[in-house]
Image (cartoon, rainbow, N blue to C red; front, side, top):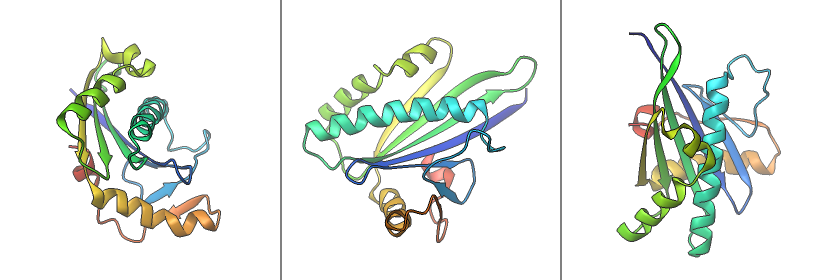
Length: 170
């Protein structure tokens, strides 16, 4: 059976309203992408929709608790390509710049399971969700984008790719 993997990173900083995307192994972090971009597939769009919804729910959760409203959502989508193309599984890693208590993590997971896109695909697709405290990866995105945001540049090239996709998407 053949498989294909698509990776989408969504970084959001609610204070500065930064929403950025990084597709697959690209070294480019984009504050937006064009739907006519040849590398954007329907699978990317589904991952972005799911990731944006989960990101917004996460930011609301953090804001209500007066915590820093920032997160990185990494969605690794595996597709079976033999015969009929079907999504096999989606592994989601939510990185936060802080450690949640076990009770807070349970509440956040319940909230994230209320995402309408998540609910629509849960019955037919295996979805795993992992929440981790990863200040390093959050700092990486903040530093890579802070100078670019003030200059209003739509594409920011990362200085070095010290954070690998394999670390973000287990």
